[in-house]
Every structure is written in structure tokens, then in C-alpha cells.
Image 1 (spheres, rainbow, N blue to C red):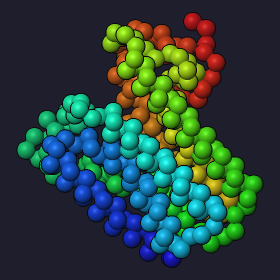
Image 2 (tube, rainbow, N blue to C red):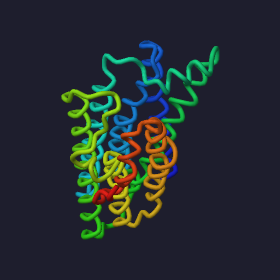
Image 3 (cartoon, rainbow, N blue to C red):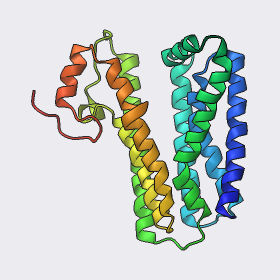
Length: 259
């Protein structure tokens, strides 16, 4: 399929997908359902790209299953985390700020914006699916290996943090400093970035360099916008976290520094 036509189809599909989730948000009266929509959206884009492009190579099949595993796991992780809890404070603050325009602004600034970002970040997967070039196998398998490694790091980091929160008697000032979190303050984000750069390497193996746009986008979002900065600011007044911050790498896992 011509790449322009593929993107038009995917844009329509993502628009309808986010429209459904916007309807869900109106029904449950909370906008943080968009966080659950994020992971599943990549599964949708991956498989529609696969079928619309007539993909059939081993690399393309592997990419479809990897993005599906990553997306379904993220969907379950976020949904289970938010279940039976109040709406995320970020979305509550947005609603209060927007006042009587909250419905329209939620539609455009939360759901449609998330849809656009979802499509942008998906570009490595779309690039792999739309390629008709033979794969340079060593580079393709390297990309898949990094992709799998990133998923594993993200899974382990999320599990360790969830276990720490659920099973330890802790005060609100206690900080997770064991496991992967001993070497990085945000190992889950490192795993996610690693996942997308692995998909870029796989895309490059089929001569689709433009797939790098997705990895650049998610790296920028995590490190400069809604990931690391937001969490770092949340703990800016926490003395235990500031001590942890001084001795622990922000993203890339490294041996802890001396005090």
C-alpha cells in the first residue's frame, strides 16, 4: 500500500478508537481512562498496519506480536493500577482549570492529542509493516533482541514497584531503592525507551529510516515532558528522594554513586 494511503487509514482508525474511549470517559466521568487506551492503541495500529500492508515476513510477524505483547501488558498494568482508585490528580486539575469548557477541551487536548502522539510513536512499527525491502537479518534480529530486552526491563521494574507499594509497611516518604530501582530512578521508562529504539533498529534493517521519528518522540516525551520531569517534581520536597536522587542515575542503569 502507498504509505500516504496507509497513514490516512490509520489516522481514521485511531480517531474512531479514541472517540470510543472519549465516550467511555463521559460514561465513567473520569479522563484517566485515556492511559489505558494508550497501550491498546499500539496493538490496533500494529495489526491494522500488518493487514493493510499485506505483510508476511518473519520480521513483520515478530514485530506484530511484540507490539501486541507490549501493548496488552501496558493496558493491563495501567488499568489494574487505576482500578477502584480516585481519578489521577493531573486530570482532575485539568477539569477544574477548564471549567465549563472541560468536555470540549478534554476531547481535543487529551483524547485527540493522545491519538496523534500514538500514531507518531507508532512510526517504527508502521515502517516495518509497510516495507517491501528484504531484511538485513543480523540488524533485524538485533533490533528484535533490544525490543524484547526493553519489554523485560519495563515489566520487571513495574512488578518490583507494585510489589513494594502493596506489600511493605511504609510511610509516604519511603522510596523504592532496590532491584532495578537501585541503579536507575526510572528503570520502567528506560525499558520503554529501549523498546522503541529496538523497533527503530528493526525498521532500519528493512531500509525504513523514517521510523526513527517514533523513538525520538517517545524519548522526548518521557525525558522532557510527561514522564521523568513530572515524577521528579512530585518528589521535589521529599528529603529521602533527594538523597536517592544524588546517588542514583536518572534513567540509564548505572552503579550507585557514593554519597
